[in-house]
Image (cartoon, rainbow, N blue to C red; front, side):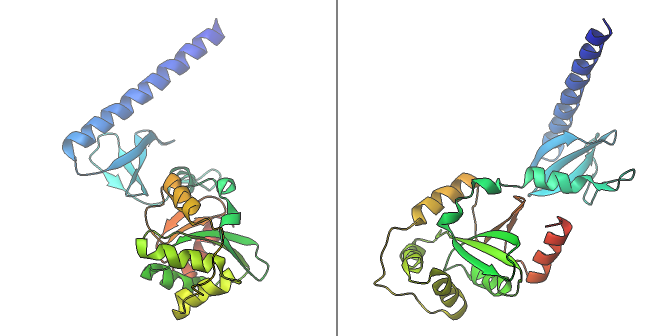
Length: 232
């Protein structure tokens, strides 16, 4: 009987939590329809909810009148609960990446791993490439990802070059085009399908080995800080 009562109590609590979330969602949609609040859920703190807004973790009170950002730290064990939410809502399964379809570059020990979806005609990708060149002890997997139609041909030429990694660096850092005569079987269309399935809508998009996704030309210093934050 005690076990049955416990199960019933748990079900009632779960139903109550779901109802509270739905009530808050309704308040937000009615009062602030322009806010694109997603992934709303209760936190460990009574009366406080977490959500994502423009891919950023935010917190809301149960009245739906207050929103704030920052890290939630559980004092008893100093655990950063916000970090877990960031990974939960903005991550990709690294093990599912077909790394053989990417250009592999190893520097130093190569212990830290990073995947990059990059378009050869994207100015931000060229900026990122210069920053990636500053990193040490890293393995970079570059998925050539030609979102621009004019990038498809040169993407295939880079892949088919006798030294794809060097051809890629020459193209993005020195504006030196690869050989136009080199042809081979290439993964460019597979990369486009892969990126679409992963929700890669812009370049450059970076994926850390823990699955955390970043979009934009991050300076090397910031990438080092992110690695440090996630203990990678």
